[in-house]
Length: 355
Ligand code: NAD
Ligand code: DAU
Image (cartoon, rainbow, N blue to C red; front, top):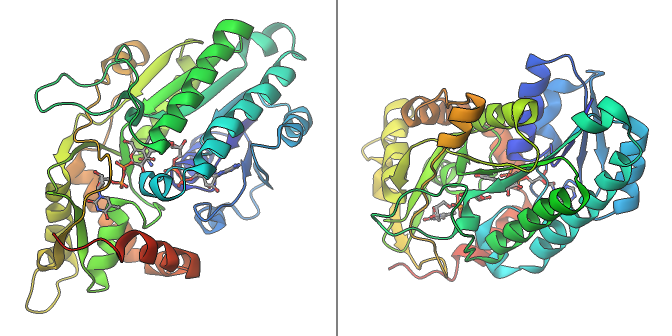
């Protein structure tokens, strides 16, 4: 079986569901169930003997090692993290704890377990670390997209914590020979994304008749990838990636935030029209995110050439599926908009003046 961390979060749960839909191989899924972890995402796996869920904290290295010794996985795929940039600006501490110290504790546990393996089991073990394009910093309008050779220049507490974890993973390969692979992916969207992130937040607010907050001038550029394409890239990296290598993953799909929001509004106008108005009338420009990176763009040429991975969805097909999923799963959205979520909304948005 394989060992997954953070498999109750957005990308992790999509990965677990896709994996079990395509493979007979079991998963032990270790997740702390922070505000971002949600077992509702995995409800379709109830009674599936291939899925072993364990509530656990990656910072607890002894517990991680005990689980590795108990389940004896052939690979570890590490998604668990604090993942939201705005939260990292308000409260960076949890980002250092989980993303830096937690990854360190997990690497130590993986190294101890891997050292007990012999022969093919040892050679074929993989530690796949899921990281982000944000570690490369911000691009100018005419700069070439990030490659695996781009120097790290993280600008937020979140991206700095992910960059630190990437460096630790790299060091465990070089120093101890632990067979690690790192993937650095661009912005994901799709089912089960927590409505603190731009796309699900805009959909939830649009349908609730609330303002659609655009930070700054809305001209920031992100590269967007449908989540199942990211999951396929991770499977491919696990299957055929070379130990010690880094693979950038992206959708070749750069868009300004304001254009993403306008696209969402246009699809909602078509699928769930609001009487007498367009959802775009709810757009509000608000105070910018401090240190906001202007542009990310990913050159995914290496994973395409070396591992034969390519995204299946275009933004047009992926965003339509995503909007339809949220319209069909309003109960899921309502369930995650708990008391804790509402206090986050108050903290992040109440003091942003309209600009
Ligand atoms: P998420 O916030 O939706 O999920 C994170 C999961 O990790 C949650 O289930 C949470 O409970 C769990 N977790 C947090 N701290 C933990 C701990 N100490 N021990 C065990 N579990 C813990 O995040 P996501 O958007 O699914 O991102 C998953 C990974 O992919 C992260 O490493 C993130 O940096 C990376 N990534 C995300 C994106 C994106 O667009 N969302 C893009 C590139 C890379
Ligand atoms: O690039 C990959 C990263 O993408 C991942 O590593 C992160 O885990 C993930 O959260 C995401 O980070 P972003 O900061 O790009 O995602 P977010 O959805 O928070 O914001 C996307 C863009 O939209 C960003 O430029 C900020 C802007 N934004 C966001 C929110 C929540 C707004 O304009 N208004 C908002 O209310």
